[in-house]
Image (tube, rainbow, N blue to C red):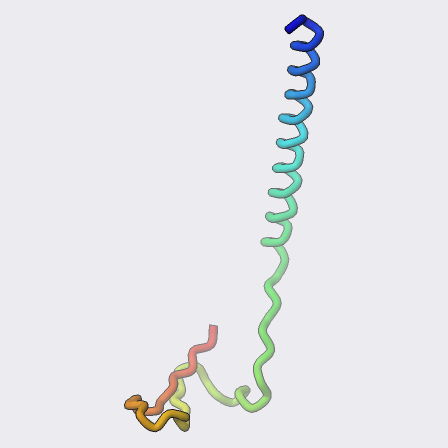
Length: 77
């Protein structure tokens, strides 16, 4: 390789490295900006608004050979 080709290779390598770091910086900046936003709250079904966390609910199983006791515990996060 002659000197011009070697110089061109290193210049292009430096451009690729610089653009890679610029891309990583912008992606990390946008990711951290997303973490600063408040999280959207999930909508609760209107019939479940009066149910408290940890309360037992009556559930009707669809399978006849199901041996569960039928209780479901609601946990809200």
